[in-house]
Image (cartoon, rainbow, N blue to C red; front, side, top):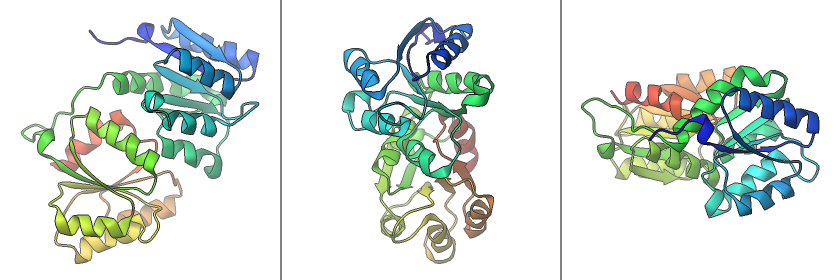
Length: 263
């Protein structure tokens, strides 16, 4: 039986009573029937311990912590590590949002136009909770060998979980470009997924090395990053990446993107 929005239990974390009611109203208009609310991060954690929701929708600025603190705290607890998290905020700066992107979220929505991104975000939540294995035609997902390079443990965990949901099982994780070099020398990979900002050797340098010096110089490369600077993204493509994906790691985007890269 497929999940629907009416089946979901959603926790809304918002310090403003007016914003809390407005967001709850938008959710109910889309068929969500079960909503619980909290005004602070500590109140949210208390609710999370008593009942695990299907989705947490949170503001960034709470009275006792930030949305970043909330999602990172969730990711450190085994029972909450895979609970989808959606941020609704007018914050746009890279520094506050980067930890949230790294922790793995289903969506970042601009509070000033929350209605615009809500439908897509809720659809991504349903897909994340009840994923359909990806269709690769004649290729069996279980045979695909993936190399994943990212220095963030939380980001690796989220990406592995998303790839597992799509049917991929053979995923080799490393923490930086230098470890990725050793992995490529030891394993025959079908695709390399790499973060851009890593210590030792970053994603751009790794792409250049793969294309010019590795024995697997034709391997498809998907670069993932929370950096939205277009000049930086262009450099990575010039270095040899086939595609750049902006975090958060979106399961519906990957469903479209990965078959093209693997074929």
